[in-house]
Image 1 (cartoon, rainbow, N blue to C red):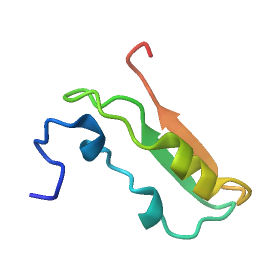
Image 2 (cartoon, rainbow, N blue to C red):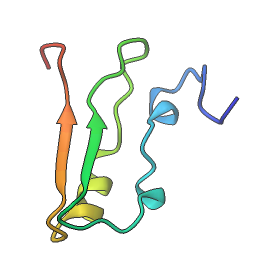
Image 3 (cartoon, rainbow, N blue to C red):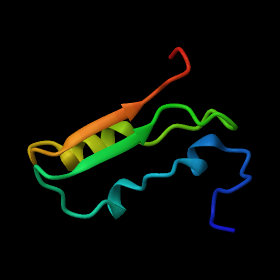
Image 4 (cartoon, rainbow, N blue to C red):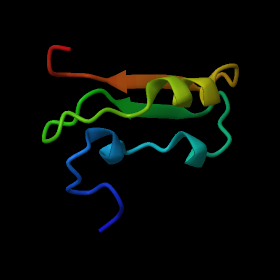
Length: 67
């Protein structure tokens, strides 16, 4: 299993690795998760937003559980 799966540390379960996001532009949608149903883990919003800022890409953060 990939590192972080079944880890007791929620941040190790974050799915989007900001350094691994490729170059994006105005045709790109980057979707982040605010609270995994099973673990409560969230993606790294600030670092990913910094990567996307100024590119014209759409950054969406999904949080559908009353955050």
